[in-house]
Amino acid sequence: PGGTQLRLLPYSILAFFVYSLGCGGAERTTANLASYWAEKGWKVVIVTLAPQSSDFYHLHPAVGRIALDKAADSRHSAH
Image 1 (cartoon, rainbow, N blue to C red):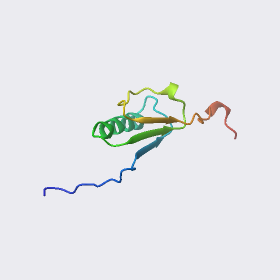
Image 2: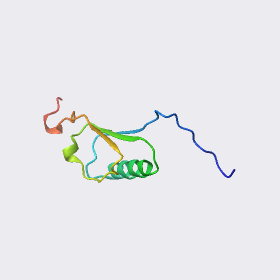
Image 3: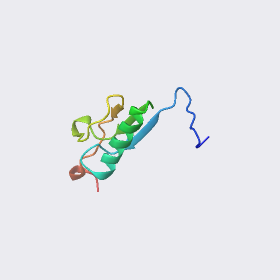
Image 4: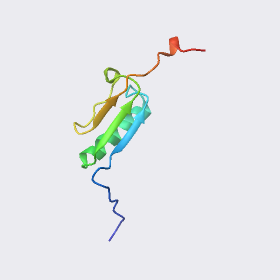
């Protein structure tokens, strides 16, 4: 009573995909939401194109992190 409860399968993962976790609003929101849900016990992973070395925001220790390191340098992109 009082609300709907979301039932997750044991293998459910909340995944976020963003270009990077550099300094920015979308990146901050992603880090905050991922950390919040990880703290609540959810399985959470953040996937970025940029390398992890470019991360600006701290994540909860339970947040999984996959950096594909496939970010293109815009100065060298094909036209």
